[in-house]
Amino acid sequence: MSGRVALVTGGSRGIGRAIAERLAADGLRVALNYRSRRDAAEAAVESITEAGGEAMAVAGDVGDGYAVAAMFASVEESLGPVAVLVNNAGITADDLLLRMKHEDWDAVIQTNLSSAYHTTKAALRGMLRARWGRIISITSVAGITGNPGQANYAAAKAGLIGFTKSVAKEVGSRGITVNAVAPGFIETELTDALGEGVRDALLPAISLGRFGTPAEIASAVGYLASDDAAYITGQVLVVDGGLAF
Ligand code: NDP
Image (cartoon, rainbow, N blue to C red; front, side):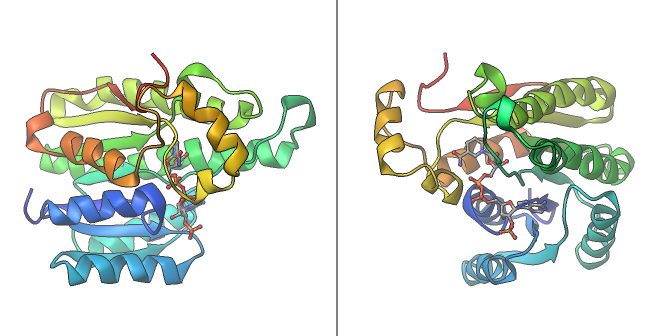
């Protein structure tokens, strides 16, 4: 993997940061994208650099095609063409469908799903030239099972799965694999918002009896990004401690 360039969207915090750290430890040069919290992105870059890796932070809203084009231009100029793309940036804006605001529907679809349209198209150009590439999107078990209060989020995450399988079929002959990882409940700021009571109520449904860690999702991504996973494409790897099966 040494020297290849990875771009991790939403790589400044939570699962994305763990993925960026893992890929850097595996020898990739990592660009980690963020939207607004520059301090978090800089802290992630510092932690990777201190561990002997190479990383840069790049700002940009992944739901905005122009911002994504600018982000790719900056990464390619500084590090070179992107060989491993991890579509990780995501948000939630939960509510029951009847109460859901149209802007919350749009924001969640744009950030979680349209983002993959923008980034994957931009990354594919270099990957097709290199005849090698890895595209890994972070979906969710909510996109497989559905979840009350998350019609927007589950629709976006299910959409990512259809996107993954379709693009895998389009580019497989060029040495590019396209897969998804579907986490269950993982300890991040996204799930901190659930509150202690809701978290305790969820535990009995998880076979392993605990939330997962960002590093446990990063392990799955690290594997799919590696040459060991060269014959795996169009798949959804569920990493949920035995929640949805
Ligand atoms: P966090 O909320 O901890 O981190 C989100 C990251 O995404 C931040 O780096 C944030 O940057 C970035 N981000 C958000 N919106 C944008 C945007 N428009 N453009 C660029 N970057 C953006 O999330 P998690 O680590 O928990 O989640 C990561 C992914 O995993 C998401 O796709 C989520 O849906 C998925 N997932 C998470 C689960 C969990 O239990 N935590 C379970 C299943 C799936 P900034 O801080 O600058 O805004």
